[in-house]
Image: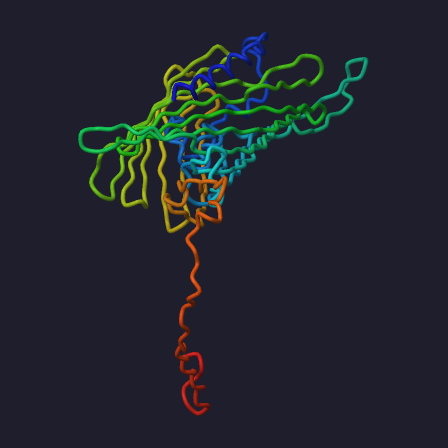
Length: 382
């Protein structure tokens, strides 16, 4: 864990020089919480990180997906802005990862916002009206690809048993395109890094991520950096009776260019794997506070709802639909890579082969299935 955190912090420091224009950022779409479940937990999700929306919060969490997963989210907030989020991920059952420790997973997402239409009024030189026209106010699009795998397993010997702390690492690259009033556009590339540590026997997990490394958008003259964000979180699963699940999570986030920080916390309760209730709250943040949500599961389908209280733009309602299929057993995902045999024994080391050959025997013939009587029952019964 210390090594992984050092990598994340050094990456953040390397890009810190971008923030010459403190307080000025571009592509605010990158600050919109995605996933109804994560939003209802107050975005305290970097250590939970167990559904496809983790690609936005902590790419290392892709390793928590043990089945193929597809999800879409719709955000209903202000009257003008519309937001859609589509994501999908799949484990790689035949690839044990670059480190050979298993849990290799890939994912992709597409986030799009549209700011509605605006009316532009034109004036003549003498101040009279020259007419008006309606144009699109612009919007932002973000296309993301991510990969994650387990990089190490640290065992801890106790008096009664051996505990394991698994280390996962993930990275994502994203392409950001922004338009303004149908007249200007800009695009850039950025990247995310994430770390996830889990101790399954203790119910503890730790998460850390850095989002939107590098890149800036330039419309006319000035370059505005992307909203660089650093997250650090923890989650704990309480011991509950069978068919009940209770988890608490908290995240601390620092937004570098705005020089802002806030803390989010959330609680999730599940019953019989079919229903979930969630609460969250964000501290030291002006535009968000209390959050609430629930989730329903039926076979491979899932519906999640999240509500966020916002002071400036009204309440936000998120709906996420999820479909999971092709589940893989955990033991298949953690199967280690087969060792490579560099050499074979010399021929003289092999035991000598005798001239005796195994005796042959007649294998009994299977009785042929009798064709069904045309006058009897139909053939599919046989």
